[in-house]
Every structure is written in structure tokens, then in C-alpha cells.
Length: 555
Image (cartoon, rainbow, N blue to C red; front, side):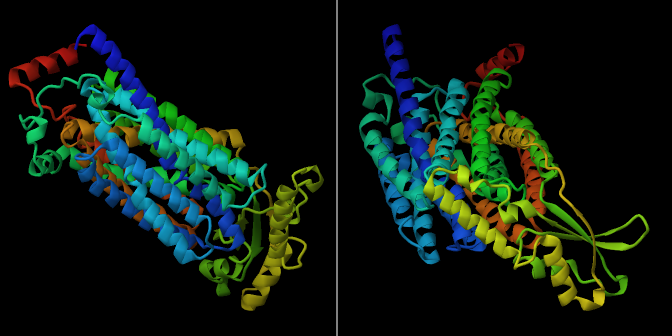
């Protein structure tokens, strides 16, 4: 290109990056709204955790299949039109989801939404490789990838506004994003350009791909070989399974476990997940920059470091002390009730109640119960209803307090309720109340800091996997490669959806969060197995390749 052509290309390139980021944000706004709305849906009794877990799992699986299948189509069709159609259908599914109260229809609409959402990224992956040279793909695609986080931030912020100050119900968390996505569809159709040629500028000049064939002669068999014959793509695809468990573990269940495990209200929990996503924006850009500058485009090396740090922050978040109430009871050693029996008995009070046995200093056996609730919260003593000016919000707060008060079943506090229930159900155990105290929870700033640390490091690999796959498969099969890594990533919803729901229901949030840290370590090991991989799948002359590698080592 001439200097004039290069200048014009640069302007059009950044226009494409920014415009496509704006459009792709709405693929997340119409997807991550569920994580906020589901907390209120649980409260209203319109859906259960198991149902949400199943919906998230099937949605994620179909989304992954959609990305894979649509990767074939996106490599052949106009990305701008393909993306616009997907977003229009997504807007429709969100609107319909907000109109129903039947679990079966929730499932149908959200699963179809999974397919239409999967039409977005393959089109973008294809267009990005036509607009950005492989040597700068990590940095610029990392910038583009922040659209994921910005979309989630807008979704969480919008839903927090709807459920908080505006005092609206959860249905508006789907209707408002649907209307915004419909407007973004029009913007996509008219403003996003599929390729430099469509924008009226010269195409990128890139070294010959591994097939040594012009783009017009590339066959489906060639594309399959570029993707499925590449060991690095297989390793990062498998690692992506574990990256997405960690990512969706925090994103899909974040507001729920912050409320039920950490005792943090939904309004504050939503803001904390926003902080998680904002940290992810910085982490994504940093990961792209460090990949280009320190590792010369070898993204898997950055991923190894990021996954180790994500595991450490996840573990630290899990281990932080919670608030709530801890109660100790003396029991007869000869007739101890099973912890599972006690948990089943008291789940109506707190479905996340923790039950365990411990030995006192004198060697006696003690039954220890932990609930996230305090008596002050249950009776509403911690809420000044008169200070809430918004009538809808005050009515919602009164309803929430009434629901909590019902849990006490007429008793003055948890101590009296638990003692009566245990003595009635297990008379031979001779249960006697010993003591209770309300642990001092970790300060919210520390909880938020560790949550942000996890977000900062987990989104680096999430962004770089697409870049590694695109560079390894070359621009001729970038969409197919991203479809393959995508289907592996979204297969993880078997674990992050119904899997986490199962662990939480049977073992509590503590074990569920601890498992997330373990999954991060497994992902790190898989990335480490590709540590020595080349930066791209583009083929150069062997002598030239050695000179390039030597120059990179000396930089």
C-alpha cells in the first residue's frame, strides 16, 4: 500500500473495530441479563436453581454448537449481514422470554437465544482476520474483545437500575435489552463493513498461508486440515473448556452466590460483578499487549500465567470469611443425626445452610450450623423503609422482609427455631443450644478486590484463545477454528450450569467455589503443554523462519 492508502486503511480499520465492538456488546447485553434477573426469579418462585442450571447448560451447549456450525457459514457469507440477522433474532427471543412465566417456555426461548447468539462471534472472527494483520492481532483483537466485558457491564448496570432505583420487576431486564438490540441491528447493517474491499480500501497483504493456495481455491477439506490437524488448536480448545467454567462460574452465578454465600444484597452484588467485568477489560488489553511485546505473539504463554493467577484469586475469594450467624449445639454422641439429615430439615429456612460436627476443647461433640442470615436482617431491623422514597422499591423491600420473616415461623430468632426443630425431629440426640455469634465478614472492598483479580486474569485467556486459534488456522479458516474452540468452551456449561447447581444444592457454595479454583489449575496445565508452539500457522521458507525466530529472541 502507498502511504495514503495506509492512512485511509488505518482509519477504516479502527472504524470497523469500534463499530463491531458496539454491535457485539449487544450480544452480551441480551445474554448476561439473565444472571441478574434470575435472583429475583428465584425470589418470586417462577423458576428453580435446577431449572436455571439446566437452561444454562443446554443454552451453552447449543451456543457452542451454533458457533461451530455458523463458523462454516461465516467463512463463506457476508459477516455484516450474518451478524445483523443473529442480533435481530436474539432481540426477539429476549422479548418473548420476558413475556412468559412457564419454565418450559423459559427453556425454549433461552435455548433458541443460545443459537442466535452463536451467529455473532464467528462473523466477527472472520471479519477481524481480514482487517488486522497477524503481527498485531493479539493487541487489537484484545481491545476488540473488551466488548464482551463492556456488554456484561451494561447488562449488569442496566438490570441493577431496573431492579433497584426504578423498582421494576425482572421482566424489564429482558424487554429493555431487546429494544436496544433491535436498534443495534439497524446500526450493524448500515455501519459495519465486512472487509476492506467493502469499505473501499485495499486488502491486507499477508504472507502465504500454509496451504500455498489463493483464498478462492481453499476447499473445505483444506480448512478442516488447518484446524483439526493442528495440535495447538486442540490443546487450547481443551483448555478453553476450563477457562469457561471459571468465567461462567463467576458471571452466571455471581449475583446469586454473593447474596446466598457472602450475604451481599443483589444491588451491591451487581455492582461487584460490574467491577469484575471492568477489571476484565484492563486484563484483556494487558494480556494482548504482553503477548505481542514479551512473548512475540505466543499467546499460550500468557495464558499459562493468567490461569495460575486466576486460580489463586479464586481460592482467596473462596476463603474470605462471610457474615451471617453461626450456632453451636451439644448432641448425644451415641445418637448423632447425620449432617445431611439436619441440612434437609433446615433447608426450608436457608437452602444454603452449612452443617458440620466438631470437637470442643473438652472433647465433646458439637453440631455447628451456619446460615447467611442474621436476626437483624430477618426482622428488617437493618432496613429503614421510611428512607426509601420510590414506592415500587419500598414495596419490593417490604415483600423481601416479609419472606425472610416467614422463615422464622413465629420464633424470635434462629436460635429458638433451630433448637425447637432439632429437638422435635431428633429427640434421642438430646440437642441443647450452646452459643451463637455473628462472624465479622470480610470488608466488601477486599471481596471486590479479589473478585476483580479473578476477572483481570481469566479474561486474558478467554480473549487470547480466539487469537491463537485464528493465527494458527490462518485467515482462511479463522472462523472454523474459533467455532471449534467455542464449542469446547461452551461444552463447559455442563459443569458451570447444571454441574454447579448440583454441587451447590448438595454440598453448598463453599465446595462449588473451591472447585472453580481447581478447574483454573487444570486449564493452566493444558496451556503449558503448548508452551513451545509457534505464534502462527502461516508458512514461511525454513531459512527465513530461522532468521525471524533469531531476530525475535534478540529483541
